[in-house]
Length: 97
Image 1 (tube, rainbow, N blue to C red):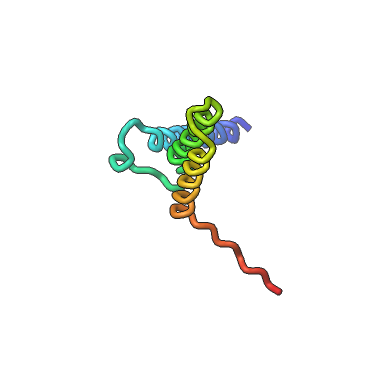
Image 2: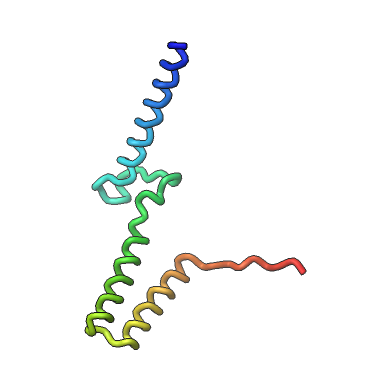
């Protein structure tokens, strides 16, 4: 029984250490090209999504504060949507009829 618990503890420790190393590799303070960025957990460091969210939030705040008119707000969001469509095109699957 003690041997099983010891093996389980070792496995859990290795697992936690690997996760910590993975997160440190992704969120390191260096530029993205200087360090290995694992594909499996890229979602942990989705800075591009946060950038888009901040841009949209800033535009909304400016609209509500009155420093941006509705037409400019729509143009800003249309530009963001166009950029998103270029980077991630959506393909709708064809229906089988």
